[in-house]
Image (cartoon, rainbow, N blue to C red; front, side, top):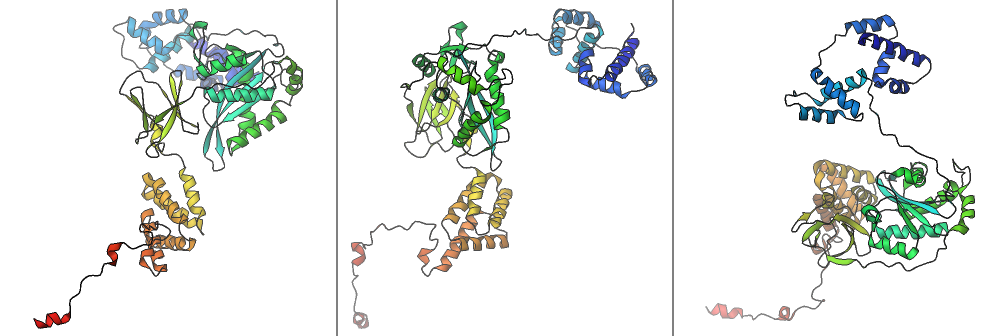
Length: 520
């Protein structure tokens, strides 16, 4: 069949399938065509117009036509070959291969597939329905992460651990503001077992670094903390293969359910409230509504499953002591011959410390209240500087929070926002520093003086926190009779002499009689 007749037949078949009610997506997959091509064919309604179009199309000579047999043989042998790999094979086997763009090779390979009916086939995984697990036998655990919004519209990332009993589909979720470590994941497990009122015989996990260092051909190497915890609790472990989420589909569906049903469009206030809302959602929806497959309420099935769970009792969970490290004044610390960065603001003066914990190939840094600061991969070299560029900014207080704090101290917040807006334009790199000065001055001065200073700044086009501070000090000076009190509220009153004059101040200098000078 000639290419002309082939294209004409496809044109009529595309229109026939469209009249039968099939979608453009289905038609494109059926013929192996791009959906834009199908859409273009459907836009040509008259057969004669399409015939004229075919006749007007000139057959172009293909630059890669001499290599047609090679490309065809490779595509026949390896159906999943990409055009990028074919391009490399052509350059490898033909020293005189012309310099063509990757798009040319892509188009030629696509033409070969269409010409000889060699569609690209993906490896199809064969699935089989499995029986329901016995009560109490298995639970599945997985992590999730989601970007929420707070009341100011700022993005807040939350992390969560989900747990589900495989038979009853009874669910649990625990949220955290920080990425899970081995110890925080253990705490989440304990909370989950309390919620489930028991422990299943086996727990199924991904190969997550929180729990496992290496698969080691079946001889699993667990993190020290999780290994000790598993031995104390006595449950069995089952780790899925890498990139195999289908083997724990129940908890994968739960992660998606939490994101789409609970977290979607929910405003973040604080992590404790979020966990309270999650427990209410579990009782109201996740564990109350009938499961879409079993058609049974998880809470009712859980009542049946509870006697089959292993009893849960409190145990003392051993935790390795974190080691203290000294923070250098450049917000870094030394570890095994290398220097690692810390978030800006970690150094708070001489004697600043952080806690270091080794987790496999990573080190995790905490402050003295055991709040995670950062983590680094351990460098194998010596004398290196391992720097996280995200550590260069002080993030303890957001700029928008400083702006709101400053405006809340004013009688007319709109004037404050105008000053901040001008500072953003004139000094964009120093907005945080300028705002900190503004907050300091406004907090230590009466609102009337601050408003007068703001009005003066607006009247004279002054856009700087330093000038604003000087103007406030001037108004304070005008209000007091004693010059030494200027800037009251901005400066500390020092009294190094304890109100007692020094002895030298009581010395009376010697005097001479004026008559002595008259004699001369």
